[in-house]
Length: 152
Image (cartoon, rainbow, N blue to C red; front, top):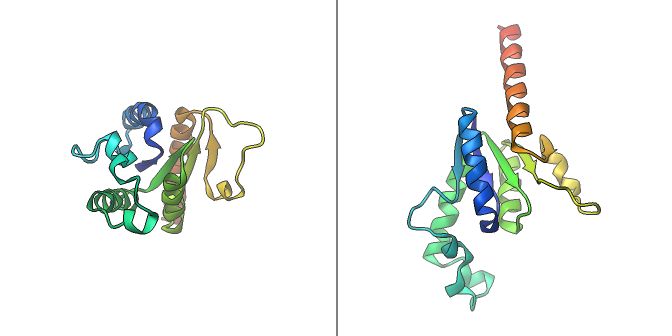
């Protein structure tokens, strides 16, 4: 399965760790940290653009390049892994993916009491470990293969 990881730059270490685990399980992974060697974590924080508002920020060539690369990754993927905690951009990526009929898996190592979202119901499930997502994907693929075999 092709998986896009949507998350925050603040989760960079876990994004890379989960990329390794997903690839070891046989999946292809698109993550924002590996895609473009010219884009650094600092570029995605946009310190030089903090004086802009949302309208002028979106006109920045760097912002546009990152947007198109990330949108390509979501379009390429079969599924999106939303790694929490994450901000509005990662949640918009997840929503875009669901709208494109992609599978959505949401991972948070600890789900705090009182923090929840109704729209997380779009997800295949909420998880606390990437290994559980790998198992869920494997089960889904086996069931899909059985259904194809039955329909023959």
